[in-house]
Length: 276
Image (cartoon, rainbow, N blue to C red):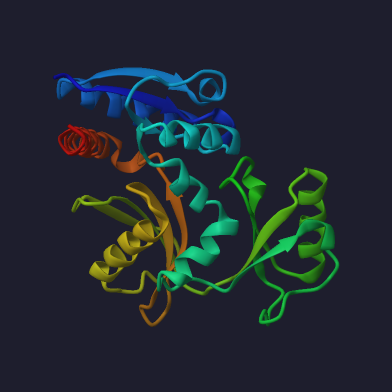
């Protein structure tokens, strides 16, 4: 029996600076599934909220709250979705900053704050005014959704700007010293790619440990197709600072799409076998 998939493209609003890259990875994944003998019907994220997706197997880049909520209902009706809508909600920073530490993942000190309380000072435990201010719900809509504030004045100004934009909660996260590493991965697979995003030291570190922390993070959040960022401290310590549900895989798009397609096909076959 031929497998039929629905593929859902991410709404461009949730792909700042990555509209083309996000579109390409989901298209190439669909192409890979078709080469394996599956049929694929593509949808846009906006369609998820206006019509029922009839396909039993869904691969989704949906990230917005409306689309994710709609997919929760679709999953409850028996659809098999990767990444699951619950795992996407787990990646909203207000949820992630609790789930990762509880999963034993080394993670920076992070606190949810109300933007209307911009002038209330730093939360307890923060010893430096230099902090990251990150949008609390979806990962990013504008480049300003993740901003480094160097002073108390900057922090207050940025929080007030978030509040003017209607964003009620943000995450304040401590700034860690070291090189930033970006990675792309697929659970239940050895497929893993990383590179230095910035930094000048390029301190040696245990790459296997990064792999293990990345996969442990994905498991804690319920993700299968994922990426993220880590800080490599001057002593080689690895700290996860962010996990992304289904990133663009831009540097390795062609290879990644084939691995993802094969993974999706295998998981769908397993699902069919378990529900006969």
